[in-house]
Length: 364
Image (tube, rainbow, N blue to C red; front, side, top):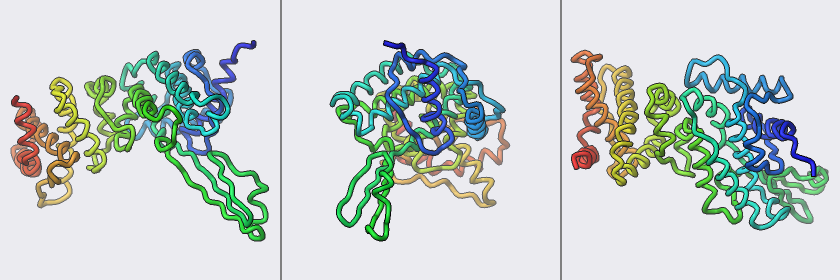
Protein backbone atom coordinates (compact mmCIF):
# COMPACT_ATOMS: atom_id res chain seq x y z
CA UNK A 1 0.00 0.00 0.00
CA UNK A 2 1.43 3.35 -1.06
CA UNK A 3 2.24 5.83 1.67
CA UNK A 4 0.14 9.01 1.71
CA UNK A 5 1.81 11.90 -0.09
CA UNK A 6 2.31 14.64 2.51
CA UNK A 7 2.94 17.29 -0.13
CA UNK A 8 -0.21 16.42 -2.07
CA UNK A 9 -2.25 16.40 1.13
CA UNK A 10 -0.94 19.82 2.16
CA UNK A 11 -1.67 21.22 -1.29
CA UNK A 12 -5.27 20.02 -1.40
CA UNK A 13 -5.76 21.26 2.17
CA UNK A 14 -4.52 24.68 1.10
CA UNK A 15 -6.42 24.91 -2.18
CA UNK A 16 -9.77 23.46 -1.15
CA UNK A 17 -10.00 24.61 2.46
CA UNK A 18 -7.43 27.00 3.92
CA UNK A 19 -7.27 29.52 1.07
CA UNK A 20 -11.09 29.88 0.90
CA UNK A 21 -11.19 30.17 4.69
CA UNK A 22 -8.87 33.19 4.57
CA UNK A 23 -9.99 34.73 1.29
CA UNK A 24 -13.66 33.79 1.25
CA UNK A 25 -15.38 31.87 -1.51
CA UNK A 26 -16.49 28.31 -2.05
CA UNK A 27 -14.87 25.74 0.19
CA UNK A 28 -14.62 22.11 -0.88
CA UNK A 29 -13.32 19.93 1.95
CA UNK A 30 -12.15 16.55 0.73
CA UNK A 31 -11.63 13.21 2.46
CA UNK A 32 -10.60 13.39 6.14
CA UNK A 33 -6.89 13.99 6.74
CA UNK A 34 -6.45 12.36 10.13
CA UNK A 35 -4.22 13.12 13.08
CA UNK A 36 -1.03 11.43 11.94
CA UNK A 37 -0.98 13.24 8.61
CA UNK A 38 -1.96 16.55 10.25
CA UNK A 39 1.08 16.35 12.51
CA UNK A 40 3.38 15.29 9.66
CA UNK A 41 3.16 18.43 7.52
CA UNK A 42 6.43 20.27 7.93
CA UNK A 43 6.87 23.86 9.01
CA UNK A 44 7.36 26.49 6.30
CA UNK A 45 6.05 24.23 3.53
CA UNK A 46 4.99 26.72 0.82
CA UNK A 47 1.93 25.86 -1.31
CA UNK A 48 2.60 25.05 -4.96
CA UNK A 49 0.49 27.94 -6.30
CA UNK A 50 2.58 31.06 -5.50
CA UNK A 51 -0.03 33.52 -6.76
CA UNK A 52 -2.83 32.15 -4.59
CA UNK A 53 -0.45 31.91 -1.65
CA UNK A 54 0.51 35.57 -2.07
CA UNK A 55 -3.19 36.51 -2.04
CA UNK A 56 -3.65 34.57 1.19
CA UNK A 57 -0.65 36.24 2.79
CA UNK A 58 -1.89 39.67 1.72
CA UNK A 59 -5.31 38.96 3.24
CA UNK A 60 -3.62 37.83 6.45
CA UNK A 61 -1.67 41.10 6.59
CA UNK A 62 -4.85 43.11 6.15
CA UNK A 63 -6.49 41.26 9.03
CA UNK A 64 -3.37 41.50 11.15
CA UNK A 65 -3.04 45.25 10.60
CA UNK A 66 -6.47 45.74 12.17
CA UNK A 67 -4.85 44.71 15.45
CA UNK A 68 -1.11 45.44 15.17
CA UNK A 69 1.51 47.03 12.96
CA UNK A 70 2.59 44.04 10.88
CA UNK A 71 4.05 44.01 7.39
CA UNK A 72 4.24 40.30 6.67
CA UNK A 73 3.66 36.83 8.03
CA UNK A 74 5.96 33.87 7.62
CA UNK A 75 5.02 30.68 5.80
CA UNK A 76 2.63 28.49 7.75
CA UNK A 77 4.20 26.83 10.76
CA UNK A 78 3.84 23.11 11.43
CA UNK A 79 1.29 23.93 14.15
CA UNK A 80 -0.73 26.09 11.73
CA UNK A 81 -0.76 23.31 9.14
CA UNK A 82 -1.88 20.86 11.82
CA UNK A 83 -4.63 23.18 13.06
CA UNK A 84 -5.82 23.68 9.48
CA UNK A 85 -6.05 19.92 9.02
CA UNK A 86 -7.92 19.49 12.30
CA UNK A 87 -10.45 22.19 11.43
CA UNK A 88 -10.86 20.63 7.98
CA UNK A 89 -11.75 17.31 9.60
CA UNK A 90 -14.09 18.92 12.12
CA UNK A 91 -15.94 20.53 9.23
CA UNK A 92 -15.98 17.21 7.38
CA UNK A 93 -17.54 15.55 10.44
CA UNK A 94 -20.72 17.49 9.63
CA UNK A 95 -20.88 16.19 6.05
CA UNK A 96 -24.14 14.27 5.56
CA UNK A 97 -22.48 11.74 3.24
CA UNK A 98 -19.86 10.72 5.80
CA UNK A 99 -22.15 8.25 7.53
CA UNK A 100 -23.22 6.61 4.30
CA UNK A 101 -19.72 6.36 2.88
CA UNK A 102 -18.16 4.75 5.93
CA UNK A 103 -20.20 3.81 8.97
CA UNK A 104 -22.54 5.39 11.46
CA UNK A 105 -19.76 6.03 13.98
CA UNK A 106 -17.50 7.81 11.47
CA UNK A 107 -18.37 11.42 12.47
CA UNK A 108 -17.90 10.69 16.18
CA UNK A 109 -14.62 8.92 15.49
CA UNK A 110 -13.41 11.84 13.37
CA UNK A 111 -14.22 14.29 16.19
CA UNK A 112 -12.41 12.05 18.68
CA UNK A 113 -9.29 11.93 16.49
CA UNK A 114 -9.41 15.71 16.07
CA UNK A 115 -9.49 16.20 19.85
CA UNK A 116 -6.56 13.84 20.38
CA UNK A 117 -4.61 15.66 17.68
CA UNK A 118 -5.29 19.00 19.36
CA UNK A 119 -3.79 17.60 22.56
CA UNK A 120 -0.47 17.42 20.70
CA UNK A 121 -0.60 20.97 19.33
CA UNK A 122 0.66 23.60 21.79
CA UNK A 123 -1.04 26.91 22.46
CA UNK A 124 0.69 29.99 21.00
CA UNK A 125 4.00 30.74 22.67
CA UNK A 126 3.74 34.50 22.12
CA UNK A 127 1.24 37.20 21.14
CA UNK A 128 2.87 37.30 17.70
CA UNK A 129 2.13 33.61 17.23
CA UNK A 130 -1.43 34.13 18.48
CA UNK A 131 -1.93 36.89 15.92
CA UNK A 132 -0.53 34.71 13.14
CA UNK A 133 -2.99 31.93 13.94
CA UNK A 134 -5.87 34.39 14.17
CA UNK A 135 -5.20 35.66 10.65
CA UNK A 136 -5.79 32.10 9.43
CA UNK A 137 -8.74 31.04 11.58
CA UNK A 138 -10.48 34.31 12.45
CA UNK A 139 -13.28 33.60 9.96
CA UNK A 140 -13.95 30.01 11.06
CA UNK A 141 -17.48 30.80 12.23
CA UNK A 142 -18.28 32.25 8.80
CA UNK A 143 -18.16 28.70 7.44
CA UNK A 144 -21.60 27.68 6.25
CA UNK A 145 -23.07 24.78 4.33
CA UNK A 146 -25.54 25.82 1.66
CA UNK A 147 -28.35 23.32 1.12
CA UNK A 148 -30.36 23.58 -2.07
CA UNK A 149 -33.93 22.46 -2.66
CA UNK A 150 -35.09 22.24 -6.25
CA UNK A 151 -38.81 22.05 -6.98
CA UNK A 152 -40.33 21.49 -10.40
CA UNK A 153 -43.74 20.64 -11.74
CA UNK A 154 -43.50 16.90 -11.13
CA UNK A 155 -41.33 16.65 -8.03
CA UNK A 156 -38.54 18.01 -5.87
CA UNK A 157 -35.06 17.13 -4.62
CA UNK A 158 -32.71 18.31 -1.87
CA UNK A 159 -28.95 18.65 -2.11
CA UNK A 160 -27.02 19.04 1.14
CA UNK A 161 -23.88 21.07 0.61
CA UNK A 162 -23.69 20.23 -3.09
CA UNK A 163 -24.95 21.98 -6.20
CA UNK A 164 -27.87 20.37 -8.04
CA UNK A 165 -27.14 18.94 -11.49
CA UNK A 166 -27.79 21.33 -14.35
CA UNK A 167 -30.51 19.12 -15.81
CA UNK A 168 -32.75 19.76 -12.79
CA UNK A 169 -32.64 23.52 -13.25
CA UNK A 170 -32.96 23.51 -17.04
CA UNK A 171 -36.01 25.07 -18.71
CA UNK A 172 -37.00 26.90 -15.51
CA UNK A 173 -40.11 28.63 -16.88
CA UNK A 174 -41.43 25.67 -18.82
CA UNK A 175 -40.84 23.20 -15.96
CA UNK A 176 -41.77 25.74 -13.23
CA UNK A 177 -38.44 25.30 -11.49
CA UNK A 178 -37.99 26.93 -8.10
CA UNK A 179 -34.55 26.85 -6.42
CA UNK A 180 -34.32 27.56 -2.67
CA UNK A 181 -30.87 27.94 -1.12
CA UNK A 182 -30.51 27.83 2.66
CA UNK A 183 -27.17 28.53 4.39
CA UNK A 184 -26.48 26.74 7.67
CA UNK A 185 -23.71 28.01 10.00
CA UNK A 186 -21.09 25.51 11.10
CA UNK A 187 -22.33 25.14 14.67
CA UNK A 188 -25.90 24.47 13.57
CA UNK A 189 -24.96 21.45 11.47
CA UNK A 190 -25.76 18.02 12.91
CA UNK A 191 -22.88 15.67 13.70
CA UNK A 192 -24.25 12.13 13.89
CA UNK A 193 -23.08 10.40 17.06
CA UNK A 194 -21.10 13.43 18.28
CA UNK A 195 -23.89 15.83 19.18
CA UNK A 196 -22.53 16.27 22.72
CA UNK A 197 -18.82 16.32 21.91
CA UNK A 198 -18.62 18.51 18.82
CA UNK A 199 -18.89 21.83 20.68
CA UNK A 200 -16.21 20.65 23.12
CA UNK A 201 -13.91 19.85 20.20
CA UNK A 202 -14.46 23.32 18.72
CA UNK A 203 -13.74 24.82 22.16
CA UNK A 204 -10.48 22.91 22.33
CA UNK A 205 -9.60 24.14 18.84
CA UNK A 206 -10.24 27.73 19.96
CA UNK A 207 -7.91 27.21 22.92
CA UNK A 208 -5.13 26.74 20.35
CA UNK A 209 -5.97 30.08 18.75
CA UNK A 210 -6.97 32.16 21.79
CA UNK A 211 -7.08 35.51 20.00
CA UNK A 212 -9.78 34.05 17.76
CA UNK A 213 -11.51 32.80 20.91
CA UNK A 214 -11.76 36.37 22.20
CA UNK A 215 -12.58 37.91 18.82
CA UNK A 216 -15.55 35.57 18.36
CA UNK A 217 -16.74 35.59 21.97
CA UNK A 218 -20.25 36.69 20.92
CA UNK A 219 -20.83 33.35 19.19
CA UNK A 220 -23.84 31.35 20.45
CA UNK A 221 -21.89 28.08 20.54
CA UNK A 222 -19.58 27.03 22.00
CA UNK A 223 -20.02 29.71 24.63
CA UNK A 224 -16.96 31.72 25.58
CA UNK A 225 -15.22 30.75 28.83
CA UNK A 226 -11.94 31.78 30.37
CA UNK A 227 -9.36 29.01 30.25
CA UNK A 228 -5.63 28.55 30.77
CA UNK A 229 -4.80 29.33 27.15
CA UNK A 230 -6.74 32.56 26.66
CA UNK A 231 -5.78 33.78 30.15
CA UNK A 232 -2.11 33.20 29.30
CA UNK A 233 -2.48 35.53 26.31
CA UNK A 234 -4.44 38.02 28.41
CA UNK A 235 -1.73 38.22 31.09
CA UNK A 236 0.88 39.69 28.74
CA UNK A 237 0.66 43.40 27.97
CA UNK A 238 1.03 42.91 24.18
CA UNK A 239 -1.51 40.08 24.31
CA UNK A 240 -4.05 42.17 26.21
CA UNK A 241 -3.61 44.99 23.70
CA UNK A 242 -4.39 42.60 20.85
CA UNK A 243 -7.42 41.30 22.72
CA UNK A 244 -8.75 44.78 23.44
CA UNK A 245 -8.44 45.70 19.78
CA UNK A 246 -10.07 42.44 18.70
CA UNK A 247 -12.99 43.04 21.04
CA UNK A 248 -13.18 46.62 19.80
CA UNK A 249 -13.46 49.51 22.17
CA UNK A 250 -17.07 50.04 21.13
CA UNK A 251 -19.46 48.77 23.78
CA UNK A 252 -21.16 45.89 22.00
CA UNK A 253 -23.85 44.27 24.18
CA UNK A 254 -22.95 40.82 22.85
CA UNK A 255 -19.29 41.21 23.83
CA UNK A 256 -20.19 42.51 27.29
CA UNK A 257 -22.65 39.65 27.77
CA UNK A 258 -20.06 37.04 26.79
CA UNK A 259 -17.40 38.55 29.05
CA UNK A 260 -19.91 38.96 31.87
CA UNK A 261 -21.04 35.34 31.64
CA UNK A 262 -17.47 34.05 31.66
CA UNK A 263 -16.44 36.39 34.49
CA UNK A 264 -19.41 35.41 36.64
CA UNK A 265 -18.47 31.76 36.16
CA UNK A 266 -15.04 32.55 37.64
CA UNK A 267 -16.68 34.36 40.55
CA UNK A 268 -18.95 31.39 41.21
CA UNK A 269 -15.92 29.08 41.09
CA UNK A 270 -13.99 31.47 43.37
CA UNK A 271 -11.15 31.67 40.87
CA UNK A 272 -9.61 34.72 42.49
CA UNK A 273 -6.20 34.44 40.81
CA UNK A 274 -7.72 34.27 37.33
CA UNK A 275 -10.15 37.07 38.20
CA UNK A 276 -7.29 39.47 38.78
CA UNK A 277 -6.28 39.10 35.13
CA UNK A 278 -9.87 39.35 33.90
CA UNK A 279 -10.58 42.46 35.96
CA UNK A 280 -7.64 44.19 34.26
CA UNK A 281 -9.30 43.52 30.90
CA UNK A 282 -12.73 44.71 32.04
CA UNK A 283 -11.24 47.75 33.74
CA UNK A 284 -9.43 48.84 30.61
CA UNK A 285 -12.63 48.45 28.58
CA UNK A 286 -14.57 50.52 31.10
CA UNK A 287 -11.91 53.23 31.23
CA UNK A 288 -11.78 53.42 27.44
CA UNK A 289 -15.56 53.74 27.30
CA UNK A 290 -15.49 56.54 29.89
CA UNK A 291 -12.79 58.39 27.95
CA UNK A 292 -14.85 58.09 24.78
CA UNK A 293 -17.84 59.60 26.59
CA UNK A 294 -15.74 62.53 27.79
CA UNK A 295 -14.43 63.12 24.26
CA UNK A 296 -17.88 62.81 22.72
CA UNK A 297 -19.61 65.67 24.50
CA UNK A 298 -18.94 68.68 26.69
CA UNK A 299 -21.67 67.47 29.03
CA UNK A 300 -20.88 63.78 29.65
CA UNK A 301 -23.45 61.63 31.40
CA UNK A 302 -22.86 58.64 33.68
CA UNK A 303 -22.68 55.43 31.69
CA UNK A 304 -25.91 53.41 32.00
CA UNK A 305 -25.62 50.24 34.04
CA UNK A 306 -28.31 48.07 32.48
CA UNK A 307 -30.67 45.57 34.06
CA UNK A 308 -29.73 43.74 37.25
CA UNK A 309 -29.11 40.07 36.55
CA UNK A 310 -28.09 40.76 32.97
CA UNK A 311 -24.71 39.28 32.00
CA UNK A 312 -23.60 42.44 30.21
CA UNK A 313 -24.44 44.44 33.34
CA UNK A 314 -22.16 42.18 35.38
CA UNK A 315 -19.22 42.86 33.05
CA UNK A 316 -19.86 46.61 33.05
CA UNK A 317 -20.13 46.82 36.83
CA UNK A 318 -16.96 44.76 37.32
CA UNK A 319 -15.15 46.88 34.76
CA UNK A 320 -16.22 50.13 36.41
CA UNK A 321 -14.94 48.88 39.77
CA UNK A 322 -11.60 47.93 38.24
CA UNK A 323 -11.34 51.25 36.40
CA UNK A 324 -12.13 53.17 39.58
CA UNK A 325 -9.42 51.23 41.42
CA UNK A 326 -6.93 52.00 38.65
CA UNK A 327 -7.72 55.73 38.80
CA UNK A 328 -7.27 55.70 42.58
CA UNK A 329 -3.97 53.82 42.61
CA UNK A 330 -2.34 54.51 39.24
CA UNK A 331 -4.18 57.54 37.95
CA UNK A 332 -1.25 59.91 38.05
CA UNK A 333 -1.39 60.13 34.26
CA UNK A 334 -4.68 62.03 34.57
CA UNK A 335 -5.18 65.58 35.79
CA UNK A 336 -7.36 66.13 38.83
CA UNK A 337 -10.16 67.38 36.59
CA UNK A 338 -9.88 64.31 34.36
CA UNK A 339 -10.00 62.00 37.36
CA UNK A 340 -13.15 63.64 38.69
CA UNK A 341 -14.79 63.50 35.27
CA UNK A 342 -13.90 59.84 34.73
CA UNK A 343 -15.14 58.86 38.19
CA UNK A 344 -18.38 60.74 37.55
CA UNK A 345 -18.96 58.94 34.24
CA UNK A 346 -18.19 55.57 35.84
CA UNK A 347 -20.12 56.34 39.01
CA UNK A 348 -23.49 54.74 38.24
CA UNK A 349 -21.87 51.46 37.31
CA UNK A 350 -19.28 51.43 40.10
CA UNK A 351 -21.90 52.07 42.80
CA UNK A 352 -24.68 49.87 41.43
CA UNK A 353 -26.15 46.96 43.36
CA UNK A 354 -24.29 44.57 41.06
CA UNK A 355 -21.00 46.33 41.81
CA UNK A 356 -21.69 46.09 45.54
CA UNK A 357 -22.27 42.35 45.21
CA UNK A 358 -18.97 41.99 43.37
CA UNK A 359 -17.14 44.00 46.05
CA UNK A 360 -18.69 41.83 48.74
CA UNK A 361 -17.56 38.68 46.93
CA UNK A 362 -13.98 39.97 46.79
CA UNK A 363 -14.22 40.91 50.44
CA UNK A 364 -14.94 37.31 51.34
